[in-house]
Amino acid sequence: MLNKRLEFCHTQHVGSDVRRILDAFIYNSENGGPVALLNEVKVPIYELKSAAYTMQTLVGDAFIVSLYILGVSYFLMSSLDLPIVPRVERR
Image (tube, rainbow, N blue to C red; front, side, top):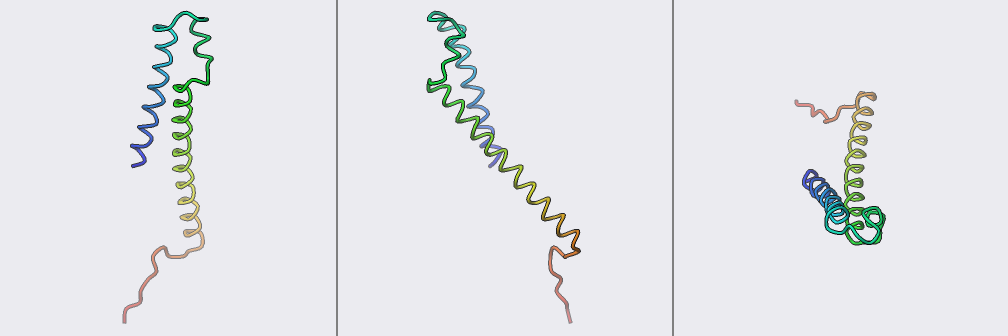
């Protein structure tokens, strides 16, 4: 599930970059040239790219934080010699 979300965000991010490059260098070379078109940050395609990048960063950071929490809890359990699964005494 996490992999599909990251793949979707990555595809959206790269696709919007490719679209902006094609617009700047191939389809629209007048009105200040490619530099002027690429400097516009208030266009919807740039906002889509920024949203995809933000989502990708948040999902990746959440994954790293969850790994950190698991690592710390495992370290605490192993250093305190507490059993992870309680033993049941049989009679």
